[in-house]
Amino acid sequence: MRLVVGLGNPGKEYADNRHNVGFWTVNRLARRRGIKFDTSSQSALAKGRIAGREVAIAKPRTFVNKSGEAVWNLIKRLKLDDARELLVVYDDIDLPTGKIRLRARGGSGGYKGLQSIIDATGSDHFARLRIGIGRPLVGGQPTYDPEEVGDYVLSDPPPEERKTLDEAVDRAIAAIELVLAEDVQRAMARFN
Image (cartoon, rainbow, N blue to C red):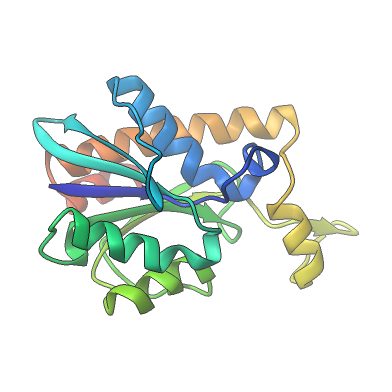
């Protein structure tokens, strides 16, 4: 079994925020495959088959930065061998809006939700799919100000940007399906 986890914040007030692009992706993947989420536990969980492979799709119902415990509990609950069966989908402020990037493993890159998963699982040996949301601009220049960045990721994109992100979500789903059908390396070669 493969576990695909989308990161995002729970609650209607966050549903359309840039920070929830991981949720957007797994929601659309599950909907397209006719797989329904069970929301009775710490994570919304949907199980089904994609590309002939048994897969679990999850949305931790913790906030992004506290995703690790929920993901670790899913790994144990699903009796996965280890974190290598995991693929995490999340937003990346340092990628241009609409760009996707797939990696077989690696560090957190400063993303607190990913670091939480690395800490909880004790491993960075899992695939991750980043969807670029771009960095906010102040005076026409990229900003690293924590307050500006926080406001940006927790805001809804304007319609034209949302369209670009929706197209990225479609590419991300195609990448996930290729990972499931073949492997991460093949998907990286095609989508990076």
